[in-house]
Amino acid sequence: MRQILVNNKYDPLPTILEHKGKKRIHNTQTEKRKWARFTYVGKKTRFITKLFKDTNITVAFTTNNTIGKRLTMEHKTQCKYDKSGVYQLTCPDCKMTYTGQTGRPFKIRFQEHMRDFKFNNKRSKFAQHLLEKGHAIGKMEEIMKITHVTRKGRMMNTLESFHITRRPRPKVKLTTN
Image 1 (cartoon, helix red, strand yellow):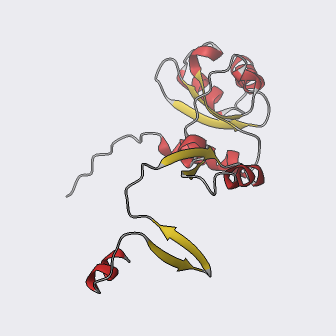
Image 2: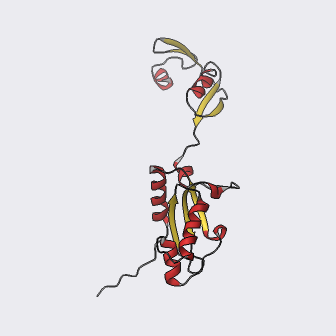
Image 3: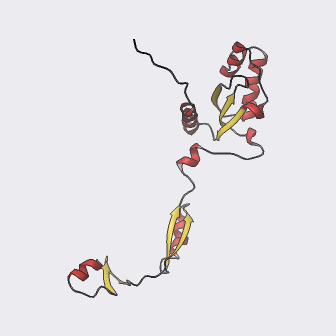
């Protein structure tokens, strides 16, 4: 708008601009703007930010709910094995990985894999691999990695699929005749 005023030989300094019937005074002098950042949580955030409406503080909204955080969460809690979600087991001998999910605590699901290994049951694919290859099983803390903590449902299924497809695939050499 300032450029239009200059092109038409009007004074571009303090002018009165109309916007939706309200008169606002626009000052072209460069004021140092102050910013306030709020994590958006709903009505409460909107109520608080309205308090800054008539000040020289500009409000910016942020969120903690990002795709990156939802897909690659690291958990540093003491009782992480008491939660449910997506996990990864690594064979101590050949480093083959198995990705699974459980709605029960991780330690209960690990005990089921352990029981299937101990009693030669082939219900668990991980136990089946260990039995067929003659590999040993390790301690839960050494071979189980919790990739994401979540409740059972669509999110857990999606996260399990994501972590399965994220696994590096073996390279295959193609030959031509």
